Structures are given as structure tokens and as C-alpha cells.
View 1 (cartoon, rainbow, N blue to C red):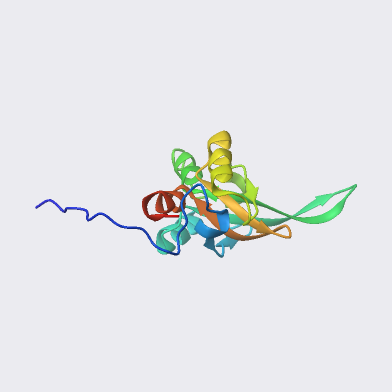
View 2 (view 1 turned 120 degrees about the horizontal axis):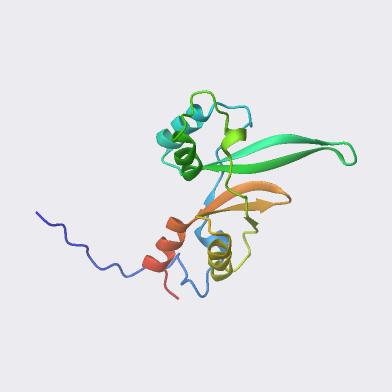
Length: 150
């Protein structure tokens, strides 16, 4: 039996790609952890919550600047790369290879798409006053492409 997709007419709440901002498409809230979290636990978080990335928050100690909060991203692809050698003894801080790219919610969605292509990433962290407040993924953009109108 083959499922037939019904054409969708869009939503009055979803603007078209040309008119949308990151805030129109992003998922609010982030799943986060500290750098010493076992990679296996991060994999469980992603699988349980059906997400593709976790924000890694930590304290960076610099002799000149002192302490400051830093963050990165561990993605499902980072886990896949680490799985080749085994993740049993690895932490998210050790495997977080995805370079975090941050944007503001007010950024044009078309510009966010360009940044994703330029940085070869499937996720952008949406930040407000230097703190992560949401994630924009390629799937979120696909939703705008599928249903956005006006």
C-alpha cells in the first residue's frame, strides 16, 4: 500500500522563506549538558528526545580574560564519527567537533540558510544576549519551504 501525500495549502502562521526570520522557524529551548557528560549519555538524550544536537556548556579559564562561559555543540554526526572507535570512555567535550554557529532570532531565514551552507552545518544555535535560546535545523527550514505562504 502506498501512502499518497495530500497537498498542503500552508499556514497563515508560517511566512514564506523570503519573508521569514529565524524566529519564525526555530525550535525554542535547548537541550544542554556539561563537557564531562559521557558521550553515551548524550546519545541517549538525543534518541529519547528525538533531537540531533546538544549544546555543551562549560567554563573556559583564560589567564588573561579570567573565567567565562563557553559553549559548543555535539551533534548526531559527531557521535557517529566517535562510534568508529567506541564511545564508552569518551565525553561530549572530547567529541564535540561541530563548530557552533550562532544567529539571532531576528535574522532573515534566507541568510541563516546561507550560513548553514557556508559552514556545512545542519544546526544553528539561536542566541539572545550571548545565551542559547533555541536551535534552527535544516528540518525547520524544510517546514517553511513546505508550508510557508505570504
